[in-house]
Image (cartoon, rainbow, N blue to C red; front, side, top):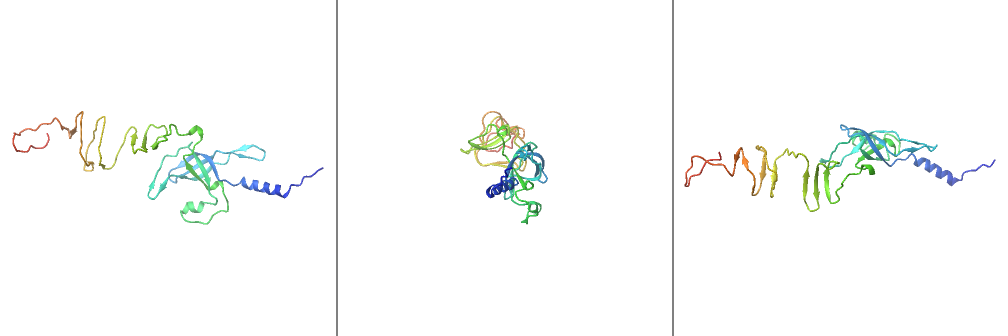
Length: 232
């Protein structure tokens, strides 16, 4: 019988390959559950592992994965995270448990390296079947995925808001020309709308507190230098 003794190079290469199979860097994943109180998710990695018998098996579902929301200073942009959403899992090189629990600098609480237990979920990445439909290539948009409602800012400085309703819960100051179409209605209060500049109106009725401004009349007045009372 002929025995083949592996060379030193072959043995080293085999050892390196075996070690690298345990190193995790980044993988696509799918959200299974999301906890808004901790902003962590259970995530299923979407690349399967190949076993020694050449059979494939899914990687285990990861739990308590911190989900990334864009933030800085005193500002943050949030959005719903739903089961089925795709994401990118990235894995820290050391155990993150101490930092995650305290928010402070911490020694590694475990000696693991590039482990599945130390993943972060970055939202927004998608496979081809789930790309964003009708992506605008000439503007910044904050929109629903189906495009039915959006805020759009293009390079010319034009801002467009589209949707079923816009609710403003603060005073509004208009310092330039205000143009409206299809009517304007509402109720006022002490915290109302302040407009700096002229207001021009044409077409239709313009009323205030039930008084049509261009058609109202005053009683009990006579020609001369006297000043009439308020609208009636």
